[in-house]
Length: 169
Image (cartoon, rainbow, N blue to C red):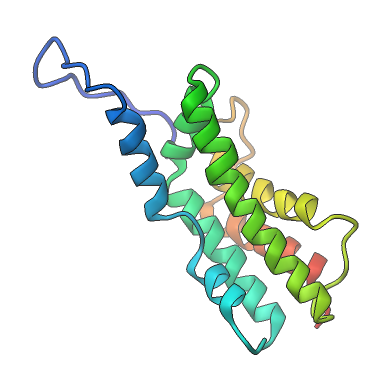
């Protein structure tokens, strides 16, 4: 239901070519608007830590929603980055890499506080968390042989697996 749709025809032809750098600036600005879940940013700046299970549930839930809301952009950036080195650097290093760093920082802090289970590598665990959400919020919509599952069930499953795997409470 949320897969590829026909692209409407342009209002005029030929389509004007953007000025040099305009497209990359546009993409950079768009990516900066929603770079990380608000609950993650709040957790990273919190002096006191509340119930970590609820906190991690909120972070994972918001991450899933952020990805689902931007699923076409994520898919387009993943594909276009293969042919556009400047976008690849922005997308894979800055955007995805930055989010993985934030998630890894959160995990490191909560492990240090003995609030979540230790993991062998926080960057790997952060990438696992992100890619689990990406698979179910984004990529499943373009799967050539999809497993039929509604959005609430996909989200609840991702959140539950991540929270149950990490939370000590």
